[in-house]
Length: 68
Ligand SMILES: [Zn+2]
Image (cartoon, rainbow, N blue to C red; front, side):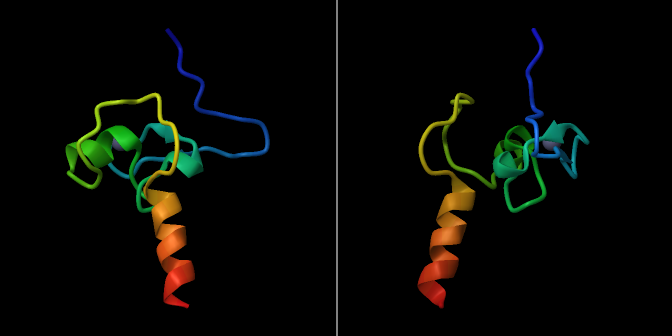
């Protein structure tokens, strides 16, 4: 099975750990893919890869807005 990580107009980035292509919005801390972020303990308990709803980047954006 092939997972499509690339969407038109959104150049994928590479995870700093495994070098896999990751859609920028799925990057955790702008650096790691979701899988590595989980392995590194950067994200919470979920094992769900079919992400839905706010993720860390959303929360980060929210925090940045609130901090202003
Ligand atoms: Zn990775």
